[in-house]
Image 1 (cartoon, rainbow, N blue to C red):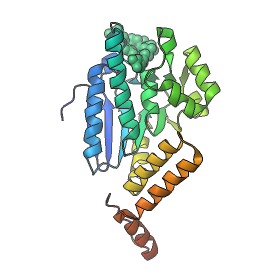
Image 2: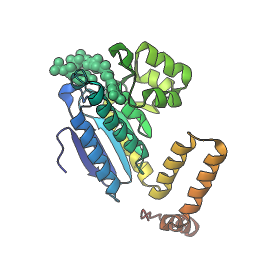
Image 3: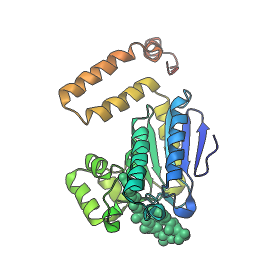
Image 4: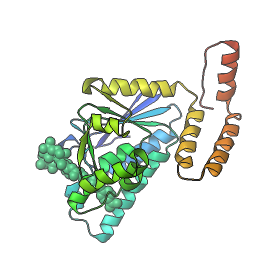
Length: 259
Ligand code: DAK
């Protein structure tokens, strides 16, 4: 499919999805959100893609929702914009494939929120993170108040959100917002190493783990453990479980089929 604001490339089992509106620092306007929506559907349907990298072109990952578009919104159009954004972010979060955010630069407002809807965040040493919304007279609206709190804890999330403070990659690493920091020129290569390591595992099992972790964190431990058991049982209906275990016992090469 042809897109104007994003680029979707496949490299083996890994898809690299790049937000490409560098003149506006990849700010999310409605058009970009709609394209992201379509691209996620495209990735979801493609059985050959086992892992996804999300990144941005130029000096930003995503500098937030598009302020130029937002400034003229009224209540109705604001609500529509919010519903679209939340739909896309949630679709990303619940995609049955792991997504790594390779945060190459500014990840502010909706950009920080977008990275938090991904499974794992790694960053360039030049990346900057923040939720500057209160400085614009709004609250974080694409899940920032919820996902940041879950990732870094109540006190740190409140400090970042109330102060609109922008932090660098090392501070993001220290508070647990990102897993690793790399030199800018190595970021994408490192993201691919990580994505390929994940893509070498049994894809259905990885997707079950994503579902179990994401659902489990929202609910009580007993219900969560019962959901985990259910998914564990489901693994035994897959060829990947048979192949993985037979390969271990026979000391042969593993070959996962995504079946
Ligand atoms: N939107 C639109 N354009 C943006 C932009 C943005 N968020 N960020 C940057 N740009 C544009 C700039 O206007 C500039 O365009 P031209 O003037 O060249 O035409 C171009 O990108 C380059 O930016 P700068 O010249 O400012 O570049 P600098 O390196 O000097 O500064 C910066 C980089 C990232 C520090 C600065 O651009 C900046 O502060 N940008 C705004 C960051 C920000 O406040 N982001 C949060 C946006 S609020 C909702 C849900 C969610 C949201 C809203 C509603 N609902 C549920 C309804 C989310 C809100 C947000 O994300």
